Length: 422
Image 1 (cartoon, helix red, strand yellow):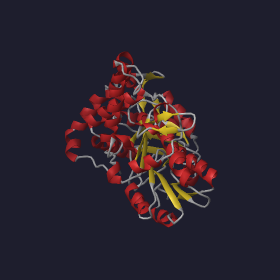
Image 2 (image 1 turned 135 degrees about the horizontal axis):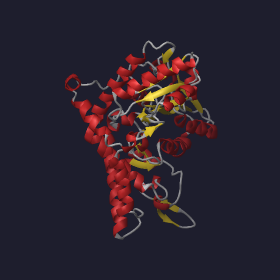
Image 3 (image 1 turned 90 degrees about the vertical axis):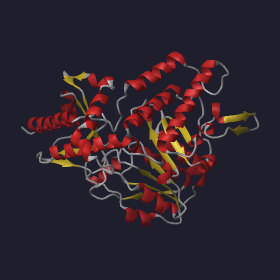
Image 4 (image 1 turned 120 degrees about the horizontal axis):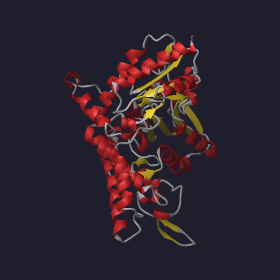
């Protein structure tokens, strides 16, 4: 189940399904054939496909506004700067940040988390201090904290998950103590689809004066995000999981935290003045954005936010929830199939195993039928170990997926079983 319930009148009328069927035509790659079959793209947790609006926005930038930002007085530079800063404002609005200066552009979620680990956490960590993560984190929300702990002598603590893949709030509350310096937790598990109780996690941490970073790489395309309502201290996400370009992402941070951060990279726009004796850093957000940014990617991100906002993230989430329920019903009863991740609060990810069949073999045979899924540990090896599997096959849904995609997936799984168990 998902937190966003589908409106029964929309299901009955079919209005939403019709609208999203029309939206499917906005994604040119979905007209591709793979191995002689129409593409059924169910690898959206890895990256989403891009609508014409995003592709055109990037191409238009290069054709009509290509110049570096912030540094030129000529017309093209001003045009590029205006487009770049307009996209920052769109991000601020999309996640309801307080100010544009709280939006830092990075290469993606991974770099955003590393910026916080190195520039915010490390200067505040000492031997014996503790950082808390959960057992369901992506490697990108584990490794930066391991590195910070190794350099400072701090200790990494891990919140367990249960067999359903749910965050253990009671264990988390016990882990919080006077040595806890930061909590870093996923909003939505990329491997299981579990939606974590982030508001409760944040409240418990703040009661002890502990800041919280939320990895929103998966959640941002499935759930409405309001950073002020969550009261998180940092929120990180990537454009490419939100129908936008690769190589660009966002770090949101409360102003007081961003101002206190030590810049991890030097050069370019992050300076106000430089001499051989000292450097004065620029104001936010530029002091944390060293070098020439991925300007076209930022413009593409802005176009992606416009696209998603026009459809409505609530409606997208409801559509994905209905697909997840449908897929779950359809695969239930397939001999030897185990759904991995059965949390009560879950978004559009169906991870599964087939007894006696390696996930890579499942993925390869489905690809023969034009069905794209992900197979492996999903950059969540500690979670796989906790759940007793080497990896899973993962189908993940997006706004352009349909019942036909699910039916083809189910037929493909049955073909895998019949072929590899014969």
